[in-house]
Image (cartoon, rainbow, N blue to C red; front, side, top):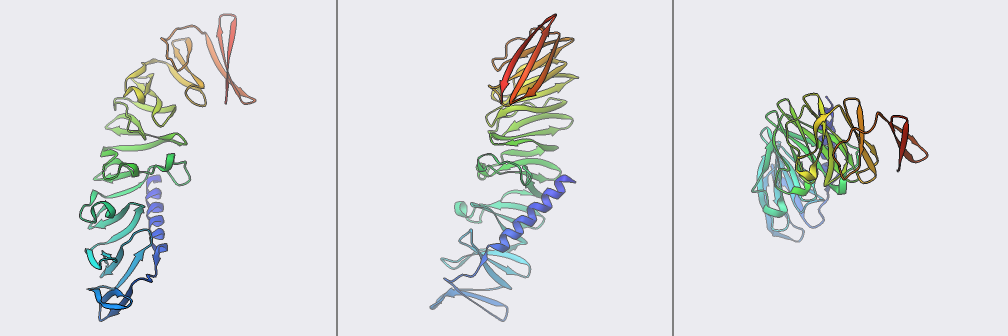
Length: 313
């Protein structure tokens, strides 16, 4: 249901954006007669193009004009006055500053008019919607979209041009975190989960569940669950374990890596590890956290002795 709302909101936004960008064209003269539209220079009717159509308009973001004929849309180059694409699309709208979202039949595609005109349509999908919901932080103006085709999911990143960021082959994709330092997502194939980040680092898809603990765009840390046990995986390690899934608990205390500690529990013993990830040592009988006055305090009890680590945030 949430994804459906994202799809509706996204296409409403794109449609409104397209309508807002319809502007008068002072450089061209447009006339309509007997179902035919003529576009010409204001002072030179000999330099013109005539075609069947119901209406024609120009989108401010692109140097192209859209012609509508019997519910189908085509594209005109207003500078050389020729039909780039005959009216074959049922939907045409700006996608971002470099691309246009189009629909032919039941499939949506993205075209890049400034790179290869409208000769190539990329992706051919059933629908798409933003990975990051409206209002969420977007890392470095990086916009990521979930692509949906025949019940499978992938990701398109506006930084990746004409390439799929994540192939459309997964059974489910979910956003885990979107923050100033990156975008993190998880993907499922069958019953197993993996995760990735905006720098294309990915874990293996072998886990019963996976959650993001901390990190930045190129260095994220995930708590993984496998056969009822927990471990830690870092994307910089290309899916290799920092700590294998053999713990009863893995958690993170702090704001970000380099300013925090990982808490591990095996059986009835605890350990606290920094980002050098030393081998687990069953040193503590109990570990607890307290946050106050801009500090996170980690208290560790071993027998009758209690030691404390303070983390500023």
